[in-house]
Structure formats: structure tokens, C-alpha cells
View 1: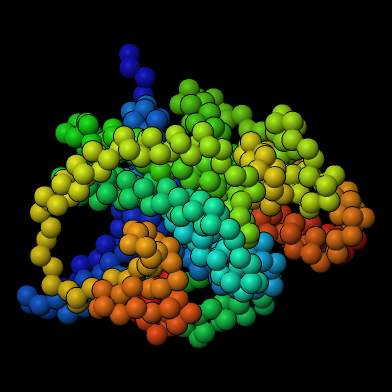
View 2: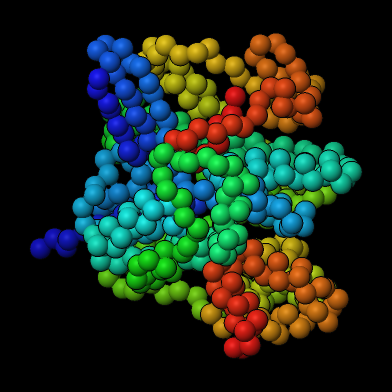
Length: 260
Length: 258
């Protein structure tokens, strides 16, 4: 008996479309990807998109409009497994930095003045798990080819994805790079999810943290280390915040209220 | 009065729709809606260090990530009075052209051609155009690899920095790019022939004005400080507001320009 093919949907909310594009950037595997599974919905790649059920929904982007919230709830209802792909879906993206109460409205007016949009109803950016249950998170800005293809293959075989649970530093050590922190360069490798192959430190550049915060990040220790090296508090805070989305906002809030 | 609505345009990058209002046989209004949520990147850039802005700004768009990278680095260098050696300029040109090759292979073969030949996507199109789809994928990969060598990865590479690059490509890497570029030339000519032979619909529209940067020395590219306009005008980049600027429309979260 022929095995039922896995139905996959790729959905895009607000972001740069880099995660969807990364899938199309798997040039050598693309034909196989389309032949191995039923790609039910992928707006960027095809025009015959279904609104029906899917086994796996890959969702890119953060939620920044009421309309996207409705769409996301509908995707959750139709999907067996939901995977957040990329920093915007997982963490809220760079745009999540402006979500504090009062801040967003002020900044919104700075960009759009008093414009009332007729097509959508904008709201402050949130990662998708602010609204729905997310089964797995595929981090990255954008996601990495290696991790995507491994995840895709495991899903086709009916297995859960095996995601990396270690920081960039480990991959950096595999490359036998010199530690940039030892050279007084403010690298965020210790705080950041691995999967990129430690690409920036391997190019003599500090990690900017774009894969989002790793689970067991010791931020207090990195803070202390950078303070000892002469960096000032605000600039460290700013550097740590850019790609760390709503997780870092919560962390700083907890620090302030003394709960850590 | 009839209204045609397309909520989601397929095979484009971004989230957009169209509404067309028709009165009898006359189209009275066409609205191009950009429904992408606002990210306020203009405001995110404020208060950051120049290096942080160089990292953030390309996140505006993945397809043209290195164009944004180029623009922000050049703007920062201009503001800070940083001069770079010709080697850096040449490598940046190459990086930008890599994006050009990748993006054009994507748009022509993946996004546009399926519509002209009646297929829902490029992979399905391979049943009728197996050679074109295969080589277009290889050409896209070639463009992507140039971007990876210069910027560190396919999308949002951090290797280009103010003043130059974190890591410079090796001679071998550059010679390989050159050899591959020469191999693709016959296919590039084939692509031009193919796209010139397509039946384009005759749509009455305003005469388009094209603009590009002039690299000088009779070269072709996207580099340079002078903006060359198809009206024959030439404008220095510092005076770009004489040519174009942003404005809002209520049915789009993306700003328009004119």
C-alpha cells in the first residue's frame, strides 16, 4: 500500500521572507522537496494554494496585524504540527523591540503620522506563540539550510525534529576559532542559539545574536564580563536586545523587579 | 459597478493584494494593497551604533539583503568620512552582482515564467521545460554562492562591514566565480531570447521612468554616485529627493515612492 504523503504548508506573516526564501535557496534539493511531500500552500513559490488541512505548517514572521492573528489561528486549526521558522516567528524579530506600552503607538506615529490604514489593523509585534501553541521552533535569521533539511526529512519520516540545544560557542570551538571575547570584542556567541555554524566569528566578526537566545544563556555572566572589559551597561543591553525579541524584554523586566 | 478582489498575490515576495473596480467596460480604480504588517524599521535604526544599523537594515528584505547592506554601509561611510581601497569597492560590486544573478534567476524562472506558460510553480513547469528549470536553478545557486563567499551566507550575511570585510575571499574562490560566470554565458543569452519571445499583455500604463546608478568607465552595474534617469537627466545621489521620495497611501503599510 502506498504511504500517504505528508502535506506541508509554508505560511508567511510579517518579516523579510528570508525563511521562505531560504527554502527556495535549497536549489540542489528543491525538486526533491516538491516531489517528496505535497506542498499544499507556499504563496511565494506557487499559485495553486490550498486553504485546507496540512500535516505540518511552517510559519514565518511575527504577528503585527489583527488580520495576521486571525490567519494564524486558522493555520493552527488546520495543522497537525506547527513549526515557527525564523527569528520573527520564534522571538518576535527585530520589530519586537518597540512593543512596550506607549512606545509602539509613539513610534508608529513617527513612521506613519496619523495615517489610518484601510487594509489592515496594525498591532505591536509578537512571536506566534503569544497566540497559539507552537510544537517546534526552527531558529535563525534566516533559518539554516542544514537544520531545515534535517527537520524536513525527519518530518517526512514521521519523527520529531532534533534541534540544537547549545550555543554558537560550541560550533565556534569546532572551527577552532580564537575566542573573540578574549580579544575584547563583544561577541554574543555564549547567549545565542547554534545552527549558523558560528559564521560570524569564523569571519573574524562578533556574533550579533541573530539566531535568538539559547535556552540556558547565562546573561548575568556575559554582562559582568563585558562590564569588566569596559563596555557600558546601556550599550551591552542594547546589543543583547536587538535579536532577542520578547524573551530579553522579560529578562530585563525580571532584573528590574529583582526576581532574578 | 463591479469589483475584482485578489486577497493574496502568489509568487511575489511579500504580502499583497489587488482590488480593481470596473464600471461597465471602464476600469475606474486599481488599488495595490500591501498588507505586510508594519515593522517600523525606520525607528529601530534610531539610537543604535553604526555597526548595529549595518546589521539591522538589510533585515528589511531577504531577496535584496545585500542591496540594503551596500546602501547602509555606503551611507555610514559617507557620514563618518571613511574611505575604502579600490579592492573593497570591487569586491562589493561583485557581491551586489551575485545578488543580481540570484534574484533575477528567482524572479524570471520561479516567479514570473510559470504564469506565461501556464503552470502553478517552477517545479511543475519542469515537465515542459526540464533544461531551463535545471540550469536556472544552477544559475540561482551560482548567484547565491557569490553572495556566500562575499557576505558569509546566502541571506543576511554579516561579513560586509564599514571599511571592508571581516574576511576577504581567497584568490581560488574568486577564480572559481570567474570560471563559472563564463560557463553560464550561453544560458544567459538563451534566457534573453526566451523572455523576449514571450507574449506580453498590452497594458495601457503611464510611461515608466527608469533610474539606475552610473558606475562610470562605460561599465554596467548598480554602483556609482550619479543617478542616471531614462529622461536623460543625471542627478547626484545627495540630491535624490529631487527625483523621488516616500509618501503614504491608506491601503498600504509599505510606503510608496514617486
